[in-house]
Amino acid sequence: MKYYSRLVIPFLVTFALAFSKLYFGEEAKNWEGVFAYLPHINTVLIIVGFTWCLLVGMQIVKRIFLKQYDISQEDNLRARKVLTQINLLVKIANFLIILLGIGLILLSFESVRKVGVGFFASAGVAGIIIGFSAQKAIGTLIAGIQIAFTQPFRLEDAVVVEGEWGWIEEINLNYIVVRIWDLRRLVLPTTYFLENPFQNWTRTSGDLLGSVFLYTDYTIPFEELRKELDRILETTDLWDKKVKVLQVSDAKEFTVETRILVSAKNSPIAWDLRVYVREKMIEFIQKNYPESLPKTRVEMTQRAT
Image (cartoon, rainbow, N blue to C red; front, side):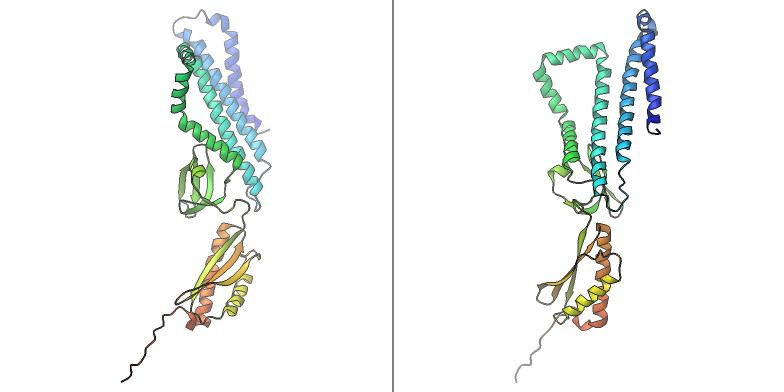
């Protein structure tokens, strides 16, 4: 009921304006001077009031739909999907409602109606002019509709865009706001995400694999590293107990590259887990196998005399 209470004021205002127009309808035709403009002003205000009612009504519908979805839950993939669609569709509907309201207000002026008739008489020229002038707005609107239904990303998806890692914070018809990990905001046009590649780390789920690379000497014992990795992971809540792998991924001229893969339930935790594992593994090597830290070998030969 509290949602519908927001509709009371715009409805009463619009109803009062419409009633006054009906009540003074015939009598208003005989008004002169400044009062002669009141009927037209009344008509404009009725259109504004009706537009206001529709906009408030769309917000009420949005709140009713979203009431049953909570994105604060850990498993919120479906909630974020619905929230993204509803938000975009409501913004598109609001845009069309405002556009319709402005159009009706303009058509209430006799001079504008005459210009409109002239445009319709030369529909080809009008179409070209309108097409060029509204190209950007129409393209943005279509991009918003595409994102709403195809959903390459959703609200709070973890993404990498323009070399920056962050979360989708706002999805608007003409721009997208990405909240960078250090709390900066990256603002990009909506069409950017349809024309350029980007990484979405939570497209189907929040689970993520984190990688840690270690560079050591050839003398490092790999089985001991695996045992230490098991011990480290068992002592932290950051690991989701799904994936743990330690493999020698490369052998370079002076060092051996060891890759560790660990899993976490979302991207921020995966980052913290990677940092934690890297730190503990380096401490283990420093303490127990300092001779296996990367080194450069120099072979010296004694020349025969």
